[in-house]
Length: 322
Image (cartoon, rainbow, N blue to C red; front, side, top):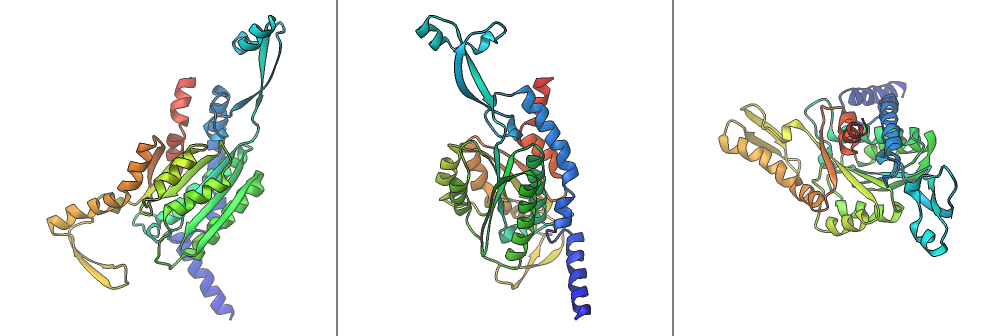
């Protein structure tokens, strides 16, 4: 029995090392990287305090009340309507939002269990989600998550602090294990509909998917969600999806499990290969563009920090602030 347990542990460790399975140790290690991201978010938020979004996008302010003008008040905050009505100068008072919600919507569908560089797309998605969770917690905001995939209908309600982040990380590991080996895909629309119910107005919603699960019902669901939330997407991909492998014959496993032989020495096959993957994600990318939502492609060999900085606008805002 001890030998069996040891073999299982070694197999899991090997899978983690090879970038095949999501493990808690790897997600915990993202905390140090998240600290830098959270610090950048706070600097941007301090320079753009009026931006209405989560702390990732700049902390917002809410109108509280108007009171009689006092020497030293900022004249830019004058309440001209009350001033005109009362005949006495009044200024507006605002309260800074101390806590905002961030919701990660993580695809655990079979198409993400693929990767030829460093790790599977599923592992990269979980690493990115963990980075977001840590950065959100370190910024003092609430982090929640929705997981969707075969046999998976799970969520982590938004919570603050390290406890909130750890709950999400444990869920990412559990969701990866639950959906491992399954072949059926769950449509994106179902996840978006669930996000509508869970996300409060003003929540930053970040979709993590390769786009292959986009269906016709996804667009109306996305429109409703984007109507009261700030939605962005990280599109997971692998370099092999964009460029055909070196010329040769390759044996692949088909959808039904039967082997399929592809001749990549043939010009037609080489041209058709990246086109097929582009077609799979085309509907998702087009839907995001129609809604003018931010998105970025993240491949399996890259680290997610730079992608998140670009996606959430930190780099551009930092330049403007400077």
